[in-house]
Length: 218
Image 1 (cartoon, rainbow, N blue to C red):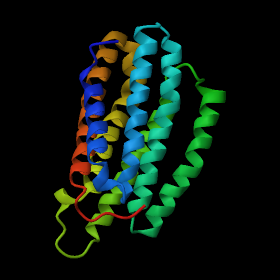
Image 2 (image 1 turned 135 degrees about the horizontal axis):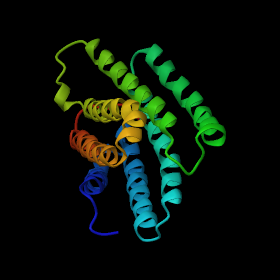
Image 3 (image 1 turned 90 degrees about the vertical axis):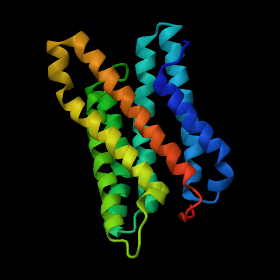
Image 4 (image 1 turned 90 degrees about the horizontal axis):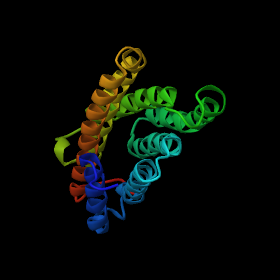
């Protein structure tokens, strides 16, 4: 199980930042990041233990088939809190309502529970890209002197956009590439995704460190 890969240390680091700074964020919408990061770290460590120590690759994938959709739903929930535009709020609410149904149908009738659910990843990552773009469009409508780098949600949206845009583009080509070059594709895919994970959780850490700025209550 040890040593842990770099991307897990970034996740642990983001959790520790949330824990240390929780006093600053407990009255804001960022308070949900602490249980979320605890969930992420728990999933990663459990999945790594099941795969490395028990050799159960199917169970390991099943764990991620549960956790990945929950991640998408969490980010949709966070975006919904911060949207000013009612249409964007409705869009995120529709996603939160419909996506679990799609996940259930895909697992039960299409791709199964023990394998890589590429359909869920494609729909989930594309939805996250759209929701992040909606947030940036909301920012463009803000009046006055807006200091983007001091807005915590700006960093979360940036991390979500970069990670999911990268994963979506690669997932589109994954089926073809994996059939032609399985070993090379797996290596490149892992390398890209792990680096994007580091970017995502760095952005989340920065958002918490910016938590002294004005935030919505939630």
